[in-house]
Length: 343
Image: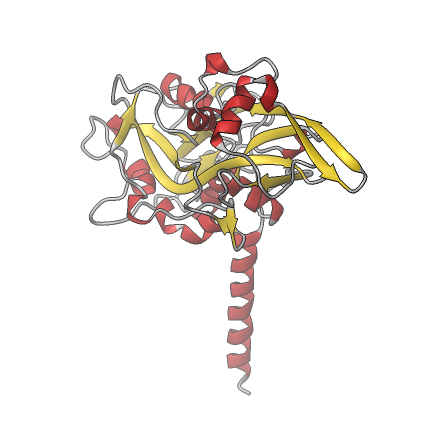
């Protein structure tokens, strides 16, 4: 065999293997080193922080300035404050979709976009634009060693009563070989400001004011280690669960397993069930003024997130990474700029 051919073949195989390993390896939290300041800075949602990190590694800066990478995505949790620019811009780390959106509104020049797993909750202005890039869904997680793992799961009506803390909804009796087992449900809910919390409560028809006193409403989203009791239940991002259990992101699922809702399974062949009852888009939120037609258009931000008739957004070209992180692709809806609001 020709030696040069063998060398080229080996190099190509090595490059392919490296590409696959880079695609499969968990993306680090926050830019590394901390002085790797990038053109577009994002903060906010726990649910999309890991795909945000992966996109940050994958998308290059066309100007190679101030970094070779375009997007800096800072995790929802970690040390605080964070520094997002070389000069000034030392801010409290925003934890959650709402905190990210508020940080975007209040830190002009330090943050360019907010990661959000919810849509706008205040549409009194068109100051911000929610740009969808993938599909997720929220289901209920229980412990793998709990009788609540019955394969049946919950209905929306049951979840409404549980999170209202209706007494009759908080106990379940199961027959076992050793006799009946009584389970007292202890519902968990992500902390205030979480997009998962906002979306889940909306789907089960419970307002913030109606959340019952039996609910522990302070947990970090998508952290199965919070389920320490056989009666614990919690809303959980299906995409996060898929990525965590596949080793794509930091595995926080602990003993948690996903349950059906309204008789519908959360996954099909290991992938997100796009027809799940609590499916929703996830977004990158940007100032409307910085988009095409805005008062101060930003070419880097437009190229990264906004799809035009001439070209798809750069994040929308990352379908393999989006799916690897458990999310579903949304096709032509990716990069759409029709959803607007104040926060």
